[in-house]
Length: 326
Image (tube, rainbow, N blue to C red):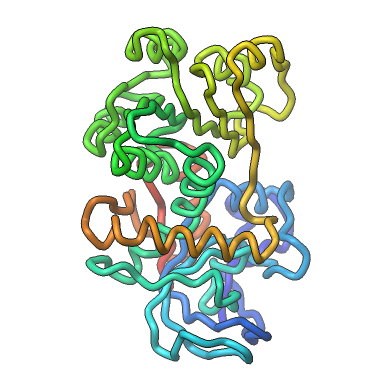
């Protein structure tokens, strides 16, 4: 088969479409013939040599994919050759074939084509596990989403609205904010021109945000704590703004607030299986019913993955960038 390899870390040009051995499904795994994968910022870090795959994972980038089941490994029940699926991966999505634990498979939701489904696994699992399973967003509460026009952001807006929450988003352009509004966002904040602490407080009568989904890390830590409501929950899922920040524990105590920080890729398989099962139970009916949809910015041939990485680095996209198998 062919896959995107990284012979040496570097810029987008480091990605090489090369012939590699076919994967073989092990105990509890299935082999997927890949139709499409999606680009995540973790892939950019792996390409640069900063984010190695977990032990035992595929060396090729790609944390999600869609395709058809090509082979069933030992000990797998409930799936058949030919099933159209999408999957959460620890790596290997930038390839023509990938082996994945059966517990990380999801059926393609009704009403969605096979390639579009590649935009779902990573964002739905990230948002559901952090915003709902950990931070317990409830109807009537306010969710602040940083990077509201990203793949994760566009999914977070839709899922929060679907459960009856109010949503604030930050983004860097008027056009991106307009697209967030079209998905249901209530409070639109241009982070280049406005202070999100002031804007969220003004829009919530001084209460603040009950839950914050943060991709920035250190840069926003102090302001995130300041804008949290009493009993608020800050969920950190990215470090685009640095890894070390000063935390005002007094402010956190006064608000009886909580901070969580998670990654998805390195979690044990049993945790991923539980998250995928929760997503299938709670999110898939919303997608099948037309209440939530993946937002796809563009599709790019997988052998031109370098172009897709440049698109993410330039941050001009909205939603997900897909890599389709040529």
